[in-house]
Image 1 (cartoon, rainbow, N blue to C red):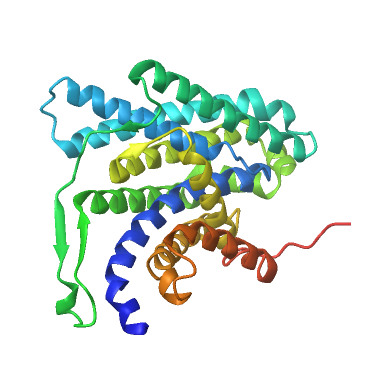
Image 2: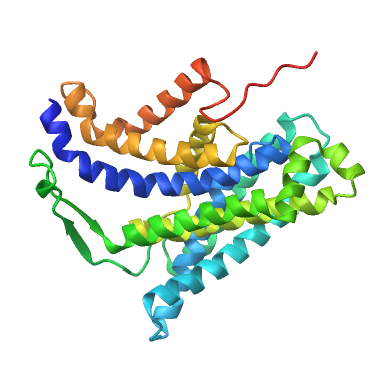
Length: 326
């Protein structure tokens, strides 16, 4: 059994890192909002999906014009436009749906977030069907050159692995986004303000920090990251639909819990770990269970991890336990 698992290991790592990078960046949106408001923003998965549709529409529009823009420059333009649009959607969502409920019991904004996610799904589905006649959309093929990796030359047990150029693009952009966010939160004035609001909102307000503005900026950054990740997802996997944000959003939430929700570096670690573990399960679940469970049960594997984390380490891998106030 072990030799067969080692054979697929290089390909599992490549696929797992790609998926994990997507989970990690989406998980950042969950963990930032939770850190500031203690709100699980379940609409964040739909922000990711909206970004995938906006990005795909922009790719189709620019390439339909017969543009001679180099692909990498086109990607940067699409990422910036999409991140800006989804960032403002996030700010609008906070202003209209969450701010009036800021002092309400926690269950109320949670239900509101679920309602917003359904609204976004249906709005995007309506627009997609209106413009293309189908809510399942396939974007243009970019960075599709296939690269073979001779991993068998490193160790003869390994099989050779392969990946598309888009793998390198997705991984590089995702890492740059995570590093930039980490720098912003830990080294800038607005990042300090965000951490102060997360620590104690009332005291931060007494220290002349504009709490509403900090929360709006948090939603803008989290939603912009989610939208940009949607573009990367569409670039890597090609076909999208209005429901991709639901399961992926739940898994990104699991990644945030795995790393320690509220902890930005924890969300990054949790996302990468979940992606690699999920791809490992997809490749080897049938082998490990004697054919009883196949690759289609990899989603169950992700949710089983969530249950185990909540039982044995509810604060997550990098989270800190908090005492219950009485």
